[in-house]
Amino acid sequence: MGSLPNPPVSQTIRTEPNSASTSSNHLLNLRSSLSAVKIPASNGEVRTGLRKMGSEGKLDKKIVYGEAGYVLEDVPHLTDYIPDLPTYSNPLQDNPAYSVVKQYFVNTDDTVAQKIVVHKSSPRGMHFRRSGPRQKVYFESDEVHACIVTCGGLCPGLNTVIREIVCGLSDMYGVTKILGIEGGYKGFYARNTITLTPKTVNNIHKRGGTILGTSRGGHDTSKIVDCIQDRGINQVYIIGGDGTQKGASVIFEEIRRRGLKVAVAGIPKTIDNDIAAIDKSFGFDSAVEEAQRAINAAHVEAESVENGIGIVKLMGRYSGFIAMYATLASRDVDCCLIPESPFYLEGKGGLFEFVEKRLKENGHMVIVVAEGAGQELIAESMRSMDHKDPSGNKLLLDVGLWLSEKIKGHFAKLQKMPMNLKYIDPTYMIRAVPSNASDNVYCTLLAHSAVHGAMAGYTGFTVGPVNGRHAYIPFYRITEKQRKVVITDRMWARLLSSTNQPSFLSHKDVEDAREEEEAATATQGDHQVSYDILL
Image 1 (cartoon, helix red, strand yellow):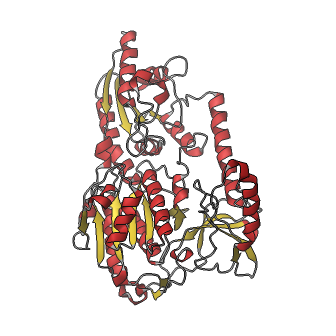
Image 2 (image 1 turned 45 degrees about the vertical axis):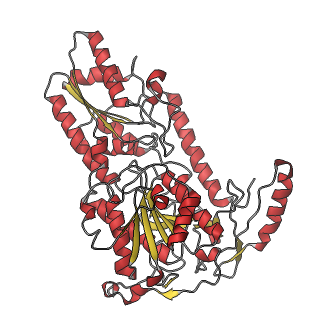
Image 3 (image 1 turned 90 degrees about the vertical axis):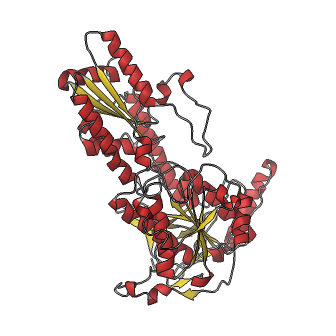
């Protein structure tokens, strides 16, 4: 495929939501209007592009079609709603640090494939726009007034991302006006800000947490955008999880509605590694590494006493990646329990039977449990099914404590088999550590990708690696679903082989999991080729 046109690549269709009684006419009118949206391909062929209907009647997906089933799921650009913006030469071409680079700038038609394992007859499939510096930028250096905000829970690497956004803007683009918004989203309208310079952020990557502070909730779109407008801010960098990125998407939509020249860039943060669109979230490697200390401690405690059991609870509200990878890395774990894989306690093949068997064989054992595992087993009186935190996350009770008491109760009934149990919960210790070396490098790439994208005029996007290449991804792709451990996949099989634990799954559980995975794959395939059908 030849060069794709650099933004704008499609026109915007806007329609108002109609009542149910007129939905058929609405669909007919929408389809008939598609002929107005044409995307020229470099080979002279014209493809139809479409912004798919959002929940409020807005068309918010920007699609480019190419040959052989090629689909580009593009991100918004300032010129989509502010035409005729002037462009400027990228100052990187005069930066001596980049003089050794063979190719300064990313080609306009560079995209990143979402899937790299294909068959010879497969369509080329879904792609995202590759991140990196562009030859032309839409902001002059002295024009930029940027701000950075961190929201949600702590995660290793937050300070590194802040540092590298500031240093990237300053060192690569000569930007001098950068604000830090303190205390999460509410800091916008609480007027809590600090000035950020390369000097003030120089050593913050060596510290855990975030120098800007954080909070959950506090999102008031109108107040936030009023503040952005009043302060003359024109680049907003938002670091946070899926709830934060949903908020960022709403902020972008309001900025677009007001017609402001403001680029909104997200850097996805989740220590649980549960963002589906990207390879890995920052802080995950550091969390797995730090979890080894807790697992090692549990192993020492367990093997030092008769029939010792060490239980370690790790993070993983809905996804068990930290528990799974920490187990695989340790090799001292006898059983790993995660939210995606149901288990049961009593009866043949249950957890109690396995614990007894392992104690008789080895005299000790270590159990790693993700915080979201086994919630359906906890008595209704012990959990908070209908309660959520300000970010919308379900409040969970401590499965580690519950499991510890259940195991103690079981062995108390046996009487002839003494048992010593130690429970370790390192959750907040892990969240608060500084990022390790690999995460520091990763955070730098994320921050620089976001800076390059904002300077190039892209907006309403988040950044992350897709099959090892960093890309610009629409906000809705980050928030539409969560990545989960696939218990019919080889990685989970590797864990079962490592621990020699039972799967605790019935044949029906395995078939249900396989059907869910197949349905998700089929939906993804439909997602790639069916943007012209709205209803």
